[in-house]
Length: 146
Image (tube, rainbow, N blue to C red; front, side, top):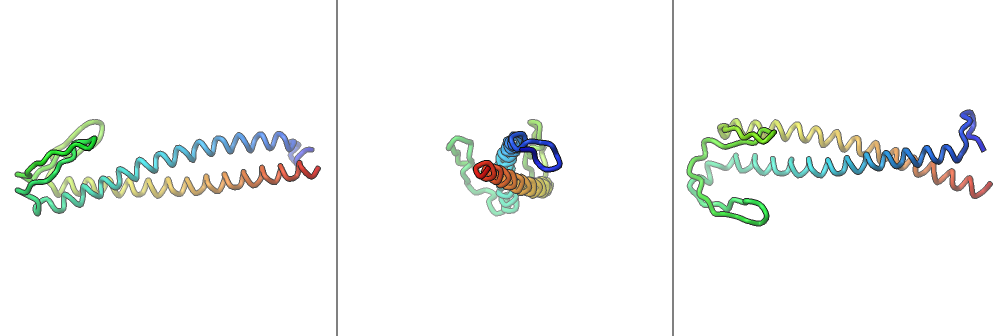
């Protein structure tokens, strides 16, 4: 049976919808992965901003420095006027604490805007996937009653 006004059969429409569903599902998975990465980076930036705001309070005190993989070393902060800040592409730049904090805050702001955009795109894809699932279900129900 052909879909009204288009000349496309229900089988062709079902195939088209399943193809779109597959593409949208892949896009959705990619967005979820990107959201996860950006959220982790955003949380780390927030923690760094907090620590930079407290550097004067911890000067000359011992702290644990996380080296990765569950390894820590006890260190004493002797000078808290300059910090090395990762600016991308493998580069570290020496900045004043205020400049480093401002840089991280700007990056966090941009990252949060991108996270909001990704969430918007995710919601659009969720709507499209639900619509496709509903349309496929309707077509399946129509096929059973023919």
